[in-house]
Amino acid sequence: MKPSKIILFILLTGAALSFLYPFYWMILASLTPESQIGELRVAPKELTFSNYALMFSKIPIWRSLLNSTIVASASTLGVLIFGSMTGYALAKLRFKGRDLLFFVIIFTMTLPFQISLIPNYILMVKFGWVDTMAALIVPALNNAFAILMFRQTFKSIPDDLIDAARVDGCGEMRIIYQILWPNIIPTIITVAIITFMSSWNDVLWPLIVIRNEHLMTMPQLVTLFAVGGRAEAQLGVKLASAVLLALPIIIAYSIFQKYFIQSMASTGLKS
Amino acid sequence: MEYVGLDNFFRLFQDRLFWKAILNTLLFLLVHIPLQIVVALALAYFLTQKIFIRGFFRASFFLPVVISGVVVTILWQQLYGLESGLINRILISLGLGRVEWLTNWRVAMTSIAIMATWKNVGLYVILFLVGLQTVPTSYYEAADVEGATAWQKFRYITLPAINPTIFMVVILSTIGGFSLFIEPYIMTGGGPLNSTLSAMLYIYKQAFEYYHMGYSATLGLFFALLIMVVVVVQKYTIEKEDI
Image (cartoon, rainbow over the protein chains, first blue to last red):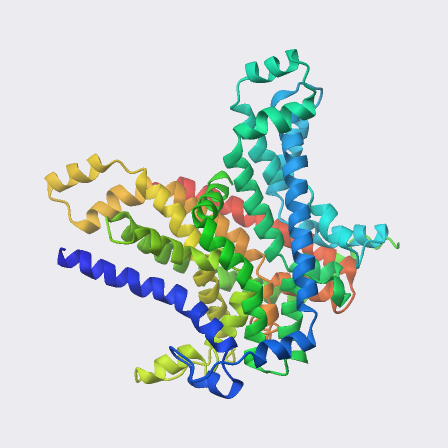
C-alpha cells in the first residue's frame, strides 16, 4: 500500500470512530451504575440493568413503543396506498384541472412547514382530535413527496401495459396494485423507508397534539422524560431511554443499510 | 373568533425576543452550513479513493442521519458536560482546557451547530459522492498532463463540476436549519440568556407555553416568508457565481 493510502485510511478510521464511538459509549453507559458513568471509556467495570428497571417503573415506555409502531406503520401504509393512487391519477389519467392540481401539490411542497403548523393544530382542535391517535395518523396518510415519487415512476411505465390490463377487464385499483406495483418495487421501498423514518423520528407534531402520556409516541415520551424532572437528573436513566428509542432504527439500519442510504440520497436529489 | 387586523404584525416588529431568536437561528446557519460543506466534501473526497472497507466507512458516517434527533441530543448533552463530559475529558487529557459548551452564552449555539453537523453530515457525504462521480476522469488526466497541482485540479475541475451539489446542500441545510427546534428544546431550553432560543422554539413557546395561538400563527407565517426569501436569494447568488 502507498503511504498516501495509509494516511487516508487512518483519517477515515478516525472519522468513522467519531461517528460510532458515541453510540457505543451511550449503550455501555446505559448499562453502567450511575456513579461510574463519569469514568467510563471503553468497557465498564460492572454491568447493571438498574437504569432500565428504573425507567420502566417511571414511564410507560412499552406503551409508547407500541404507539410509535402503530402510528408509523399506519401512516406508511396510507402513504403507499393513497400516494400511489394520486400519483397514478396524475401520471396516467386525463381529467380537467389535472395540471393545476399537480402544480398546487408541488407548491405545497415548497412552502415551509412553519406556515401551517399552528393552523393545522387549530384544525385538530376543531375536529376534536387533540389527544387521539387520529391526530397523529390521519394528517400523515398522504404527502406531496410520495405523490411526486409515484407520479415520476408511473410516467416511465409504458401505457401499453395499462391498456392491455384494461382490455383484460382490470379496474383502475387492480391496475395500480396488481399490475403496476410489482414493477415499481424500488420506489415503494424508498417511499416506505422515508415515510416510516420521518414518522418514527418526528417529535414536534406529537408534542403539539398529544398530552395524554398513554398516547405519546416514543420520541415524545423520551423527550419529556429527559426535559422534565422525572429522570431526576440521572444520566444513566436518560441514556437508557435514548438507547431504547434508537435501537429499532439501528437494527433496521444494519440490515437494510443499502436501502436506507439510497432512499435518503434520492430524496435529497429529488428536492 | 375576534378579528384583530394587523395588530399581531405590529406586535411582531416590536418583539425583541423574536428578532433575537431569528438572529440566533441565522448564527446557527452561519456556523452549520460552511462546516457541513467542508466536512462533507472532505469525507466524500476521501471516499472516492479506492480504499479497503469503503462501504463500512460510508455506512458509519450515515448512521447518525437515520437516528432520531432526540437520541442524538440526549447523547450530546452528556458529551458536552462540563466536568464529566466525554469531550472535556478528552480535551483535559490532551492538556487543553475545558470548554463551557452549553453554559456559556457565547459558545452554546456553536455547540448545537457542531452537533447538528455531526448528525446530518452523512447525508451530504452521499450527495457529494454522487456529485463527484459525475466529474469525467479524463479532465483530471488532461490536467495531469498539463502538470496541474492537486489544489488547481480541485479548484478548477472539481469545484465547478459540483457547484449544483453545493447549491443543493446549501438549500437543504438552510431549510433544515430554520426548523431547528428539538435540539435546543432538550439541550438548553433556549438558554443561557436566550442564546440558543431558535425561532421555531420561540414560535412553539408562544403557542404552547403562553397560549398566544394567533400571535404564534403570525410569527409562523412571517418566519416562513423569511425562509422563502432567504432560499430565493441563495438560489440567485449561487447560480450567478460562476466558479
